Amino acid sequence: MLVLARSTAPDDLQAARSRRQRRRTWAARTLHALFWASVAMPFVLFCVFYDGLSRIADLGTALTAAASVAGLVGTDLVLVMLLLAARGPLVDRVIGHDTAMTYHRRLGKPALYLLLGHGALYTLGRAAPDGFHLVSATRGLVGEENVPLAYLALVLLVVVVLCSVVASVHRARYEVWYAIHLVSYLAILFALPHQSVPGGVLAGDSLRWVYWLGLYAVAFGALLVYRLVVPVVHTVRRGIRVDAVEQVAPDVVSIHLRGRRLDRLGVTGGQYAVWRFWSRSTWWHAHPFSFSAVPTATGARLTVRTLGAGSAAVSRVRPGTRVWTSGPLGIFTDAARTSPRLAVVAAGVGITPARALLEGTPFRPGEATVVLRGDDEGQHFLWDEVTALAEASGGVVHTVTGPRPAGIATWLSAEAVESGATITTLLPDLLDSDLYVCGPPPWTDAVVRDARAAGLPDSQLHVERFDW
Image 1 (tube, rainbow, N blue to C red):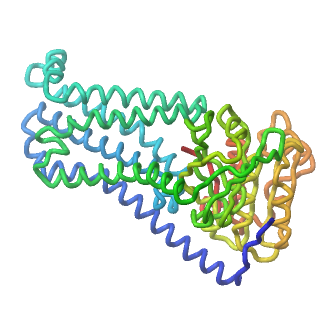
Image 2: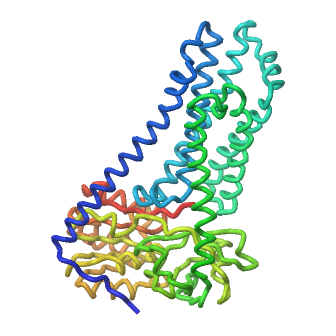
Image 3: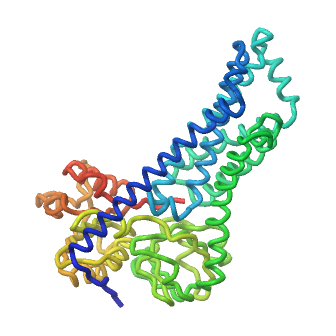
């Protein structure tokens, strides 16, 4: 059954959107300011509470001081990375989990370079008084308390970064990413004893200890709460189980869920969650799947495409299977809107968040324009529901089916290109709209490229990239 969002006065809706956008902008700027403050704080603590600058007397002590600052800032970045990956609702509502994970990945290399610099500069500083005999200095450091564990932590972090690069290039499965992140947590634990020695960041002899202990508590506390405690609470309180599995296309299924008060999960149309199905073949991996319909009190629906072994196993789960969920996540929702009109472009399994977005969005008559894209009729799943939702409020739906033309970088079909179709002919009110795009990554990038070329500002462009 299709449930249409209740309409509201246009002026009231636009005023509410403007207020939400101002709040989100303010919150995003605050998060960025806090990040840069956290980067600066280690240097301030080193200078003020450790009196680090006054300890510089020669080249050796200058190198040691630089090593300390590099290690402190590198440690700060690692903890910020953990916080970004924790799936906390505050970060998600402001910038979205996919954007948070983009920042998480970008911080990986700078954090590693700083920590490598910490080790190198500290070794040089210790070797300076003896004419830079690095081998002798390294042997001396290895013999000191907890330094071998610090070296091991650094080696593990190098492994994590290299494995992350390889996994990203080869689009590794979730299990690989999960193992990589477990190694990173292990590296941080190995580094703790080194940071607890007298003079270290966790030594309880100054206000530095309060700052670093607080940062560790926030980062690991967020991971514990939002990646473990909250999913367990949802599992127990909501009692989510598979109700039925419906084949909707050759390689696509809709998984119908049942549970208690699922409408209190706080899901907004367009969001996704990370799901774990507790069956023999699926319990050990989790997947980010969108809600393809806004949950009711007793039911929810996911629509899944079998793109790999993991999602294929999920598509075969049996009714009654218990389900563990973390989320909801994402700002591919009406809450991100800033403009009076709505444009949606979706392809493949990207139709699932688009369908839920339309269901959960209040419309004015004729406000929405939707473009549905598929290579063939096998990709037309949920198109009838999307069309019904859009047309019920006077919206326009364009369907584009067929393969892309050879030798042309476009997201449209060969037939559409030959007929002169462009993003602006399909979406004539594009510049007065918020554009929501969801589909395969290369295809999505092509739509985004065309939208930006047409003059659409990034503040009106919303793309959801499912991430871990």
